[in-house]
Image (tube, rainbow, N blue to C red; front, side, top):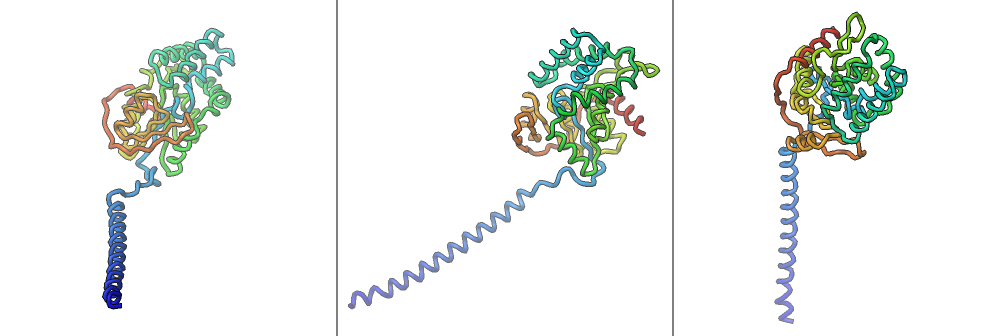
Length: 310
């Protein structure tokens, strides 16, 4: 019995110390957890809402072919003109091959695009601008409306809902781009201008196609005329040819990107969206705006469009 009496106080004392140790450990764990949560809130703030509602110095600029619409607008337009007997079957075969190549490759090849533009210019030569605009409305319903990417359309609508202006920026004819922009409820369009005299197409361009660096300069000129802050603007494209335009704004997005653009975007933590596979692409940060070199053709196109709007 003496031995048991000697052990009992030891057991009671050990139990009290265990309770104290457990309570202390629990309190320390809780304190550490709260400190970690507080530190996370300080070092990883929530991303601000974008687009910013009511920011009238922000706008969005969307490439057209393979960004807003599957395939190339110029090719769809050619199909519509063939249906209306503007040209012969051999020209349709040429357009069909160009469109098939574009859809399979998923990139803009300058040689193919130039060939397509030359074909289109020769086809519309001698026709009235008003006639082609009217036909363009019909062609949109027949060949283009069902090819608008819903995901990209939703992005454009988000900017519109935020009270921002949204522009198409494309090498496609400005008449075609304007029709598409109006049908989608966008602000307007920057596009390649075909020469006309007394309302009749001559078969020549005014300057050069709105492509590559020219797009960036058109956006820069339009932003200056409209009082926009490019660091607060967004741009969207599928092609590495539009890196100058994407680099110009504070919020660049690679949409259905070609291989070169995807690599470039990932290296610079640009945002990615790919609607071709139905999967939600990664969202990868926002870079600072960067400048690009000047190109007079794009500047003239933007200023001319701004004057027409005024």
